[in-house]
Image 1 (spheres, rainbow, N blue to C red):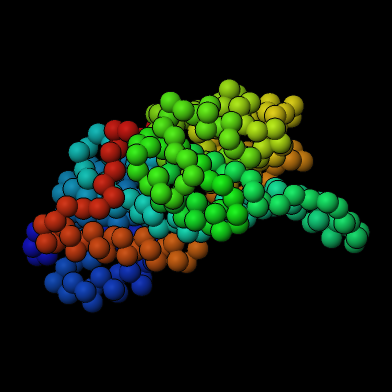
Image 2 (image 1 turned 135 degrees about the vertical axis):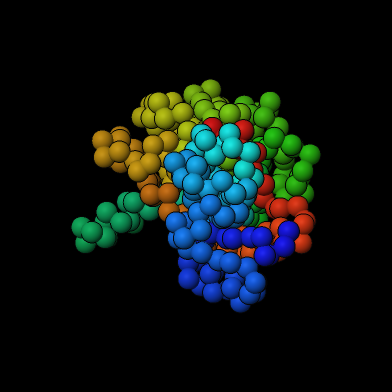
Length: 312
């Protein structure tokens, strides 16, 4: 498509830096940061577009989300509009893998005990565990899962994974499972890390039967999306076993309500869906959009297209 017929709206992301880069790369392309300035002619939007804006954006036919998982950015009307949606999938894979490993280490070593001792000025030495020789199970083996697998292996862990198509990426793990093998997969896990997208197939998939199949003393880490693990089953497993501990960066309701029991359970670490909030994540998202804009202007297929009909 000719740049003369494109008007691109940029919101959020890397903001002024991205706008400057786009204007330098595409001097004939009109880049706007205020939808009202050219609403009827905007064809591309980078950033969130609310359903109540769609009527004023009749020419819009592509929306790029700065998020890797776009379900929170795509409302019902946008899902039904036929507008192409792309994501920044892969932009936060590195920091999310690091965050998952951080939570795993903190749970494995009982780091909260050291933090409490430090606050109290108490010298508290104790015998703790190590990751070497344990098995990490990765539920959902996409960008984050692949990054996490390489890091877990560097710690001397055995890695098993579960994904929709178990024939892919098998060289990165010791054993790969499909969805039908979830209980066999769980039975191998000392640490279960949830990195899957939220879809009708994954929503609620980690239930009491899966949690009870984990190895005794196992821990759970969630860094992708809430709702994949059933909260009521997770609470029961944390209070009465078999789950020893959990590290939760993604939550079913966000922000996590003040009265949520997860805040105060002694065997739970809570972070505020903050694992991928790094400058490099934003920069990678901007590069994904810039690459896709080049593809659009040269009439090539866009990367990271989202099937909005499959979103929960």
